Image (cartoon, rainbow, N blue to C red; front, top):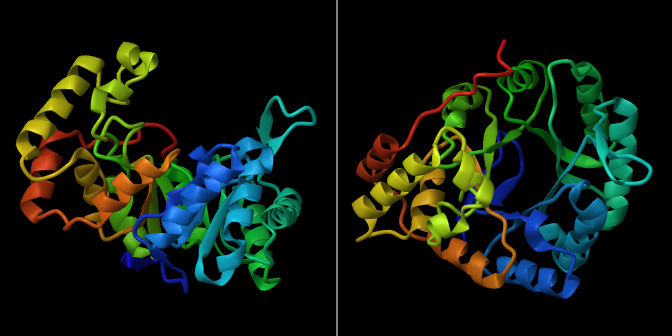
Length: 308
């Protein structure tokens, strides 16, 4: 079975690779097959959000997991509120909204409680005391077991670390986006885990590499990498490691080499994709030398905005 890691200091232990459910799509039969394959391979962590497909994603995840409810960790998110005609949403981290949103998620998931409930974003202007109060009450009331945030903003993360009992911070983290590394020591000091979304950087770190580059990436590059530099970096990674590792292995094992990480959660829109990633996380961990090579080939960027 797949190795499990503790989320923060909580009673939740999750497979070191979870399933990011956003890309499951709305074909329920196909989605259930992907979820079933994940379960058969020891994945016990499933991450969704009320925002995905207007709640349909939560329904599909709930239906797919109903027979194994006690054996899995279900995570969802709230705070983005669809407007009445559902052509857009607004940010609402208020206590009233979070406490009503959780009931809707429980209903769609067809569960009595949510294992990990996450605030789906956040700004420094939010009334964060109110949000924290909502989460703490939901824990006391038994609707959720633990809570966390999904945010890349340093000032928001620090505020929750200092004033709440969050167990996790979900952040985009990959070899091409190493910005979370700045905060790993602080998170570990607070006993809070990172859950890494986007570990394959939109497929750029998969075996398909630049064939996954969108027109936008070709034009603007990816984060701190202009396109020409992106080509060079990916080529260098491939050349220096081609004999021993697949790109998926390098990408997922690089994230997992950091002790502050509870799980990587690549999405999967097909069983083939899912199996490639399962094979990659079950491969041997990177050696210290391999980690060093990869850190030398890539940039240690930092968040320039949303700081104190």
